[in-house]
Amino acid sequence: MHNMKKFYSIKPGESLEEIKRKRGISLCELLEELDVADSDSYESFGSNRQNNQQLTFDNLSEDDRIAQNRLKKLRGALNKLAPDNFYIQLMEIQDYLPVHSSHLMQIFVRELVQKAIDEEQNSILYAHVCTALKSVELLEVEDETIFNFGAVVLDECFNMFCFARSSLNWFSYEQPSENELLELKTKEAMKKRRLVGVARFLGDLFKAGMTGVRDVFQYIKKLEQDVTDKSIEGLTVLLTVTGKELEIAVLETEFQADWCATWDRIFHLSQKEQGLPHRLRFMLMNLLDLRDGGWIPRIMSSRSSPLSFIEIIKENDQVKAKKPRLLWNNKITVITKEPIVVNTESEILKLLSLNDNAYKTICDWERANFVGRKTWFVYSITKAVLRYSIEGNSLNKTIFTQHVDLLKKYINSRQAELAAMYAVQSVVVTEMKNPKGLLEEVCDILHVTNTISYIAFLDWRENWSNCPVLEVAGRAEAQISLATFFIKLFWESIKPSSQYKSIVKELNSFDLEHFVSMSKLPPEIEKRIKMEEEREKSELQRKDRVDNVSQSYLTKTY
Image 1: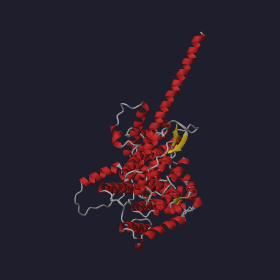
Image 2: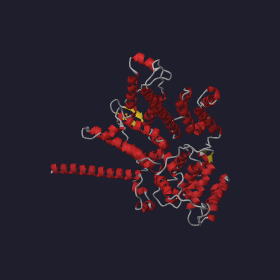
Image 3: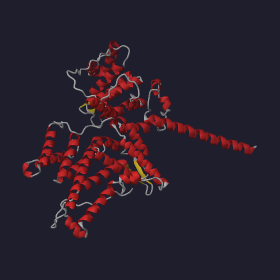
């Protein structure tokens, strides 16, 4: 694999005058060298974006043309990435990943990390892309060394963090010119923005499950050692993003003492006697207040979650149609003949506490109270079983598995499967705010026990069927957090085994009914159909070759 570039930087407190004496270069030459190091490291190995856009395909070799096409497709997929099309773009990124070229992979990873730094609002999306693809192996053909995508991303983040953290201090007996001071100030501002952005992205990588507690603490220790403007701001951002999840995770590791020492250090720095600027002291004090308040901000942060295309269109329509309205009634006045879900759910929760007799009692109660459609009952019983099995923010697998048979009794159609998945989404994502790993754990058990089929998972994710139960809230967050789960399901579905069957045979009449109304198939089904067509085509070609050989043999014999 291509060695990562080592960035030229000046250590904190090191004098530019000393560097000039040691190396015999002027300040202007040193600044030019820093420019070269910056552009070489972060703009595709010396080629800036303008040059990339103006590059023509006339004088390129075939390999270079293929590489440019791959990078173009990958950039397009990153630019189109949004919560409501996350998985479709993720599959496209996976298809075009340059797994046989570490050089191209580093270019793509560098652009991905740079976009995560520049686009604060979408940083969590890029973090989930990295997590979903972290196990993709990269094969360098020359030395046959195997790395994975996750290692390249973390290496790039570390290098960018080190580069942004280094400082450009000026100590000289000679008065620097205004241009030199302005250039130094501009570079420091750029490095500060980059350090804060990297810290935010590292926090999102931790929340997405890409990094562990040990990795985060390495960055926290490095930031708290430097009492500088950018380091303190980076530390504040990193702890604000990861604080709630990190505080829970640190209790199960050996870093509990380090966690307490970090907050003692923050409290010490926030005191007036330390002589920090007011802005930095207030940032640290706000961080302490945030932790004391259970990580619930008093004022909502300006950093909102990524907007879907539907939300952007709706927001624009609201701005255009905004008019003063008096005494507007916002109360929901929908009248429905369906049974009340809340009452049904509370009754099932009472019956579940009967333990051994719960299965029979609930079945008898359902027969006595529900006639006809069972969709709302499936929705209610799934929510009740989930609430009964969840303790805090974790799933009690033993209790949940015990009641899977009860769910399977009523989840006997595609509509019922979708209702169950919307119930899971409502409880775990909408109400519980999607605790780390909980949704994937629930879905994994439902898949392994054959409670929810593979096609139903795709149907729920793509929402291409007309299900009577539609939980819009939390659907995008659920899809993003399950990206790794869906990739695993896809590769399992195409693995040759005794259970493998054609995708067309897996689709029942309910699915086929909705094929006509679909604007686009889920990407997995499209891929499966293409793969099966290619398999059938190759099989026919093989048979033709065998027939031709046998025919020629018979001709020669006679």
